[in-house]
Length: 252
Image 1 (cartoon, one colour):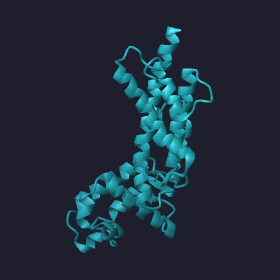
Image 2 (image 1 turned 180 degrees about the vertical axis):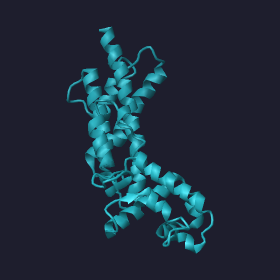
Image 3 (image 1 turned 60 degrees about the vertical axis):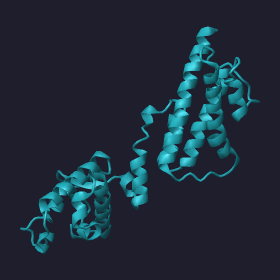
Image 4 (image 1 turned 45 degrees about the horizontal axis):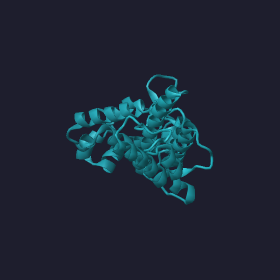
């Protein structure tokens, strides 16, 4: 693990969180495999490099806190396995041998690793079924602007269907008509007038800012965090339409 020590530093190895050290460990593993040292890696062999009894051990440098460093590496390894980034080697002929998964092979640098970390927070299971497949696929490919546009477009389509309005109503105009505070088909007339107006404005603002912009020009959205926030906003709007569509259906 001398490469890890030289890259990260002695103190940082034990100070980094498991996922932070895991990124460095994954890059080191990938470099070793690329050099052709072996076709797969084993945690035991890596830990042996901290063992004083190993001739090639980094412990020949009399490195302090070796036990803590080994624990940190084990935690990082476990994190990589739990995220599906290290998987059992199919042709290893024994237990414990691992190789980077297909997803791990696409993680070339820290920027890509951080995007992977953020992508874990957008669980497909929580997305509305009307948008889940398209949005999730685009998000995982790193096409964040496409994913947000698809989510907001899904809101627009759903509002049109639930309100019974025609294709001539689009974007902000559609939201204004569907949630019009004085009798819009999706307005909650049991709510206070100000709340009805605010809900209309919520839909208008979301569609005007994040769906219409993507329709009219290139939107370079590179932040996975921002994309997650906007997709979840669209998801919330979809749930509101669910409720208003159900209420409208029961009153007819």
